[in-house]
Image: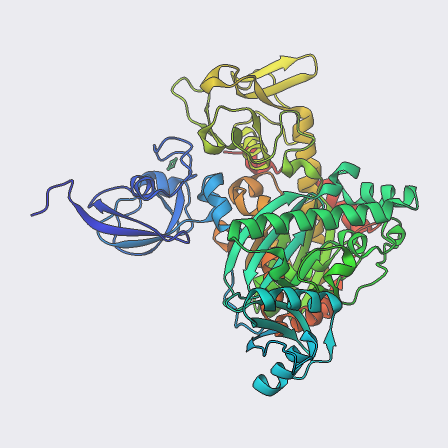
Length: 615
Ligand code: FES
């Protein structure tokens, strides 16, 4: 018989694909650590914080414990309380992963049948001789027609230049990349054509370098949108663009340079060259879309907020200042309205909300939050300004999700009566600030522990960590010196207020769409939450503060950067690009500006739900 320490079970953690061989009776949390899976564990594995939730897909495990019953697990299990009794497959939701690991799965890819617009043709050209004085371009056209039956009409001079260099360096063996009747690039004969998918956010750019032959994502990376120097939200950019005639071109150049830089970084990571990128798909909100195309944005800055152009755009990448393959094509998906852009179309496409047969709510949370409701064959969308609080901005000790940011907070029952504060920092580094998910958790926990009034006011003396300063009471999450913290990290009344503004906008937008569809909140069967912050937030905390409607947490799906994934789909499949047009045409846009229903819903959503403070 095997000794207790002998590994007898194999556990596989999805979607990371990591495995461990462990002894029977090992907890999933221990197994995850052995497998190198970064699972949250704010309480240190005592079964009280609920941050280590996982889904056991297959395999025998121990029955639910009293702690799990108390935490209402909705089909999930606490990894620290669940013991393996045999081989198992376990799915780790993004919200249960620590930040470094989450980055590995950001934007889960949906399988797609490859149908890119470009085709690759391998050719061995006849070298010129004194008896064969044809131009290089002629050799290429001739070979394409006679070897592959492909007739090309257009050969950009820059492609001819690339052909001349490439053919002579590679003994006249080349790969021609063709779209329609045009040669887009000439590559070495073994090189696969590359595609670039970019989600252009107001704050951040998310880029994906994709092998167009295999569909594989070779590299993914994020970068700041360099336009951030001219304001952190869309309105600030519009104001800047309108302040001087030279500003729009400046903003356009900055954005193109930022995308170029990101592409260089992606290519370096994949050991490829930007000149091999033959096609790109960009998605972004309507303001980013217009600024990138050099279109006027005045009409986006004032009612009735109409876009200048909503149709899909197809142009040469070089026309927009991108340095890709000489004749690389660039596609911008259609936009829906002044504040609902191509990123929303891409998100709907990637999540399949447009094909949903159940009442489905989709939220893409960012500085602006776009919301879509699919019900009864209709798609209703709106956009609300949710501000930068979720990025850690406008929060006194706020920071982006980087090492040292407090990302999870729990108040557990303490022996002395007052709840004990537990927190987790990104990479377990000394606490230096708090990021969006940490602020959300902290406020939800403060509500549950009666430290906060439903109005958002902190109650004096409600917890040993609440201290009174000249600006009013604040809740200290980390004290200077604790876990080597260089300074105190606290949540102030004003921080709580920032969160109230953001969550009220999201909830009110949701309510307006539901009212338009004649539905109540409890009729929502599925909630898809996209965007970096949306993917890693604790759904329970978001419900507790009233940001999300109080439907069962099992109905929520957190899907990562769905807009980026939609851009990837459109890069790999022309039918998806066509579907994007149908989605944009099918969406009924609901304007919230000046909408009295929204104003009423927003005002009442500013308060926190009293249920959160009633235990
Ligand atoms: Fe499992 Fe806290 S680590 S509940």
